[in-house]
Image (cartoon, rainbow over all chains, first blue to last red; front, side, top):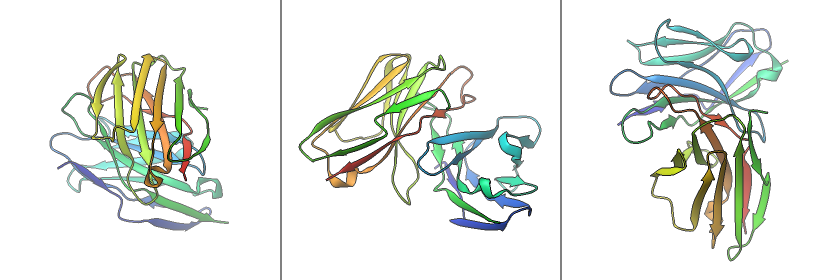
Length: 115
Length: 115
């Protein structure tokens, strides 16, 4: 079965420090991977995606993610956290096949950046 | 903010009411989606419409009835709901071209409370 896991319910980091939000996946074949962010009372906003090519993907708001095929991971990173980065982050993997190639989402990781 | 709007943003209804959620996308996309987001659970894909045809229905109870009159509009008709249907309902759209490479863009959601 195809799945995605976010092992941490919450990540705490001080402003200015680097942050990492973890994501691992399980799919058959090549994965298409996505990160979204959700601020309170808002929908999901697209941050970045990996389809093919360079393993380091750069996205919105200074975020980047590294695709690691051997570790089946796609961790989200930012060199210097801001208080405004505090939000709920979702990793998703595209499950190919069927009529729609649906997205499978993780349960989310709450990022709390302390001033 | 992302080109996908949803109304109403908040809805409180009794179990015997009939109401509808509306979604409109201004991105020229050819696919639209309904998701249910409940606390502590992954996003659940409910329905998918591609080129105005329903292509996926993930075992959703019949008290939820989708409608896609054109490629820009998507409705979710609700009747005789249960309290456990209380959740954030998210609409998304994407331009499905190369298999699996499309990005879904989300609306802000409708917070539904069933009394």
